[in-house]
Image 1 (tube, rainbow, N blue to C red):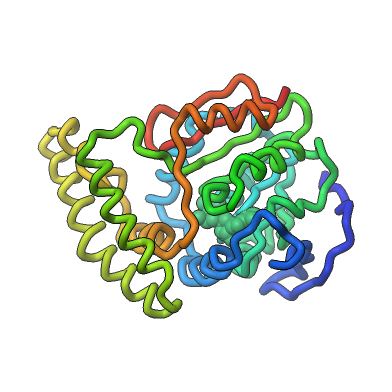
Image 2 (cartoon, rainbow, N blue to C red; image 1 turned 90 degrees about the horizontal axis):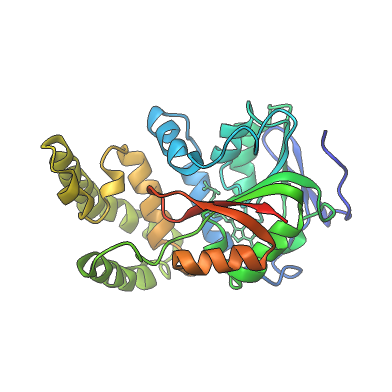
Length: 302
Ligand SMILES: C[S@@+](CC[C@H](N)C(=O)[O-])C[C@H]1O[C@@H](n2cnc3c(N)ncnc32)[C@H](O)[C@@H]1O
């Protein structure tokens, strides 16, 4: 089902299982932040294992709005910014064939996890060097990626171009707390100062600081929210920052803490802004997930 690249690779590198064709360098991609890409290469080398029960639960949070009409055994799909390949992995027994692309060294972790699956190909490419013709894919997704790219709106347009008419595109973008109160927003803006400092630290120090933050901030806050849930105080629990982590293992807390505080470029969007960008990219019938993670949405290409 896979189709040939429409460009010549600039290099081919050896992954743990397969040769990986390279279409992006930090020089030939315009809509890319080189520090972000380097940092994610390191992050996914550190957090490359995602096969536990809690991650299966997290997958349900994203894909509650994806159904079998959108993804089935006839679906040719693309995962843009696949990272370690954890979400590609989720779809390997649901889709026909999956192209998983990422411009960072995360492709090595992805090849390690997915390299033996017959219906996956891993490619080193960026949103603006996707090596297939326009209107190739039945379903595309980009999860937690486009907010780390300088021009998110253009990136979404470039992704949706690759989807066939009548196909679907799923996106998860960081929300700007439009459904949260003032205390929640204030905690975020305070934490953002930490991010601006931590994300500029050298790699090893950054990882140590993020592990400490996961232990002294993420863990207590999320477990306190969990305690409130146990006491049936669900409304109150939901007001606690980091509540969505209340049932996630410490490994995920460390991973997401590094993701959040280790990344220099992070943009946040209102639901209305995401809807606008999706429409501008040519999507219609847009559906947003009403539960965390915010905001995840899927639309159909006109
Ligand atoms: C937060 S990670 C998400 C990875 C994966 N989608 C997941 O949710 O596990 C963001 C990913 O976006 C990738 N990325 C950064 N800039 C990109 C670009 N210009 N084009 C495509 N992917 C990019 C990074 O290398 C990184 O693996």
